[in-house]
Length: 352
Ligand SMILES: NC(=O)c1ccc[n+]([C@@H]2O[C@H](COP(=O)([O-])OP(=O)(O)OC[C@H]3O[C@@H](n4cnc5c(N)ncnc54)[C@H](O)[C@@H]3O)[C@@H](O)[C@H]2O)c1
Image 1: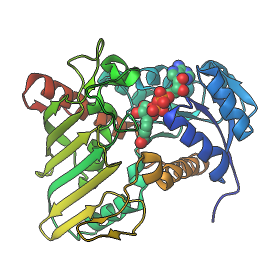
Image 2: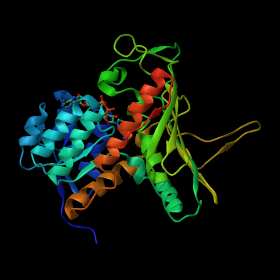
Image 3: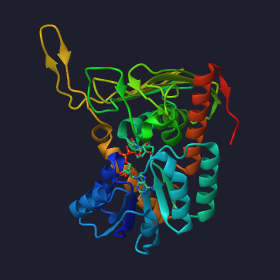
């Protein structure tokens, strides 16, 4: 039976991802109240707060952490801010849901894992594909033995990062995402979803990584020059003996396309890229249907369900489906992929 208790949540960061979480927490999730919002961009904070009737607004996240009404914090800031914010929130006695990726380095990830485990608070990482009905059905089939022994696991992310097709390439990319010291490159920020899917579906750890990565369409003058990638493949050796294969692209003009397949000795389970509707337009020389353009459409329900489950973990004091250690594992794979791409060699992971 659903609990009547509501968890009072404060959110830090209401940009692209944070605004989706804020709307869900305030409007669509019966077990949460959105009670406070913090963002260094105070105009953005105020606009969001007035839309969602939230009275507590701050430009400094520390004020949000000092608010005793806030039981749990949703972290949706760029990755370079996460360690400080997450550890401060845990030390302030708050439960934490953080956006992926967990951290920029293994040192940061380890400190977060330690703080999360020491705190005894609920701690969840936002790998929402684990809450999507199609990925969940794949996991159920694999765990029930329907595909037999796993041989190959593939997962992909293709998106149009800048939201539109442009006439003149290369396109100048700016902001934290374009600076590897702030965002960790697309091999961490975007492809970490795929590493997580591969670990989760296979129930296996990654032991070795080889990445081929190129930068063909973006121009990262300055900080990210020569260190960023817009298309990559990452092959992985899995501890169960199978092969993992992740594909990542961030200039995908036909839409937002994530997919996965697990091939086994008894068959295969496939998670297809989502089209907007099942209606197809059939013409003399073509068949078409419309693709979903953005992640907030494709994963609208999963973004809600991961926070519904987070609130339930807080209320029932149970372990979340995606833990700090899962977040750390994806960071380790990403960093190995970055090294592999730079040095053109396979990288062996040490267990952590
Ligand atoms: N799960 C997903 O599918 C998904 C999709 C998009 C982004 N993300 C993740 O969400 C995180 C945020 O990405 P985004 O696209 O929303 O970025 P964004 O740049 O659109 O928004 C970040 C927000 O954080 C604010 N901010 C920055 N530093 C802050 C600080 N110290 N205190 C308070 N606010 C601060 C900024 O003003 C901005 O409003 C990233 O880790 C990203 O990888 C996840």
